[in-house]
Image 1 (cartoon, rainbow, N blue to C red):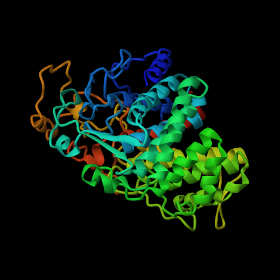
Image 2 (cartoon, rainbow, N blue to C red):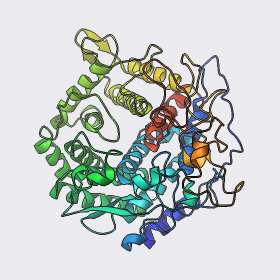
Image 3 (cartoon, one colour):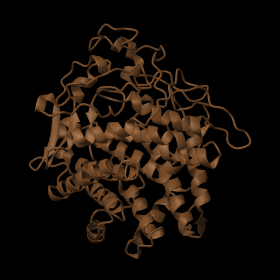
Image 4 (spheres, one colour):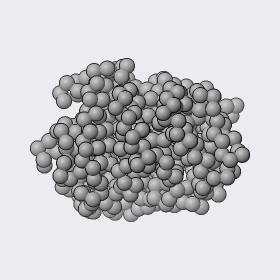
Length: 500
């Protein structure tokens, strides 16, 4: 592990910090685009620095955050310092953290060549996560999947730097399996290995070797972590979709990262039983069916792997269910045009879906193919336009003229559901803020004193309404897995409008 950390720090030595003193308003490029996608991209990556746990580096750009969780893992005699807080609380949940890592990596794999100056920042965000995931998977057939008791944490409103709630450690192993989180962790490590393959081959090999071991554990000891750790992970990150989607998703990433025929055989042998043809068009931290379909379709479309031709059909079915005006369209949109899946953190589905659209458009363009939905032909350009409309809504083209990315645009959420952002910084208030004392701030109408630049909140309701209430976690809480896929889509848009 010491070697891994040394290699990773060596990589980070090439990252030049760019300091943002304050959020800036987006510039208009009326001849090309109504939004500064490059600015939004930079901020969407910067956000992850505000979610860091552990010992912060000297290059830390969100400077109101300080060190936190420096004893994490001590309760079980392991080092679990680092990683990310998932959203507005101070718990480290392994399941969404792994998915965040996978999606950040996929963003770089598909669009990193267009990122220019932001590529190193994106790699740094991925590396902060993989260092933690390597620690969490250091012991064979064991994964440490959570640090912090969510119940105790949510009973307090305190800065991560002040945490005094139990930093309990929870794990999965042979006796208490957790296939969802294990397979997602394998996917994250495999995807990240592709990110670092050229710039840091030694680190990449460490990641893929660990991914192979973790996936074998996930597949051999099957069981839902929502069963074995129900009292701990539910209702926060309960897996409703089961673990079959993560097994297919994990195998797909290992196939892409290793080119080992073992994984192709696994996919061919188990694809149908693992839900390859599922009709659900939801893609997020819990349900990976659609993501696996799009990912595997590349093997057929681009690499001409005929044995995976069914995944083009499965991916097309997803597209047809999503695009308005097609015979099979099932997706719901707000009056203002936002894709709407559910009340709680809907924007995560907007960003993940938009990413799949621009990525599938890339694959289709490479293969010179289209999607046929009954008598309607959907071109790659149409997919990109739908994705652009969703991102533009997020950035301010909506009935409220509200940007849902903090620090971007003239008007954005002021009272996000985020402990560190809402309470005075350590620099301005060195004295500890006790567990319950912060609730007076949480319930107040005053703007958050610390701007969490780049954070994308849960977003408006089905009627395009957004109250900007700090207590409204469904609409006002940002999360790492909202931002991660947005990084790829913003990169594509910035490049396509000549901003990168």
